[in-house]
Amino acid sequence: MSCRLCKEERPIVKSHVFPEWLHGPLYANKRRFFDLRTFELKRRGTPPKVIYEELLCRECEQQFNKWEGYAHEVFFGNDPSIKIRDCGDRFDLTGLEYAPFKLFQMSLIWRAATSSSPEVPTIYLGPHTERLREMLKRERPGESREYGALLMFPSPSIQKVMEHFFEPPKRLSGRTQGHTAYKAVFGGLFWTFFVSNHSEMLPDELFFARNGRLPVFKYELPTTGFIGEFERYLSSLDPLDDQK
Ligand SMILES: [Zn+2]
Image (cartoon, rainbow, N blue to C red; front, side, top):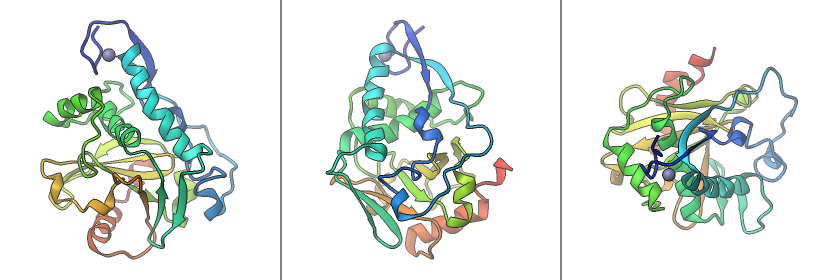
């Protein structure tokens, strides 16, 4: 069996398709979003099941673990250089390292496209799957807009509900202002991955930036421009529709 990342014939390890900690709310933790809002931490129902699959060799798995470990540190760790600020229409996390966090984001959409688990919806990224694979293998994070993910914090009315959801990436029907996009719910946040041949047309400020700033937009405020358009588009789809 060959490893999906390095394509070498090596023993494949069974591991999670998406990190376990993305199955719980990222904002219900003491250091990040939690102190900005009040949450009842009592969980109801069964926590979403972690999906395991044999995709990578041990070496490649360790490469992914490095980025996942860094992303975990961003959301749950105590690194004093990482700060969070309420900027009105969004929260800004600053002081992040660009390469590991960007590669982490890219690894999520690539794993979703590579997985053949019945629990992960099939998505076809076409030639982008191979492009992403090469970038990940060579640890090239690319530009902000290249395979960028737009993060959104849910509106108060659905925050409780969102904590209990985990949804692997699914293609949004049609095109979002001419771009193909995939929506996911990870850690109680909406993640929209843009996989586009003309990513240079996307506004830079939507995405995690080279200077280490990660914007997490608030879903509930009336916004204008691309985000406003995008929110209206998302609400027209009812993001929680297929979870009922
Ligand atoms: Zn490998």
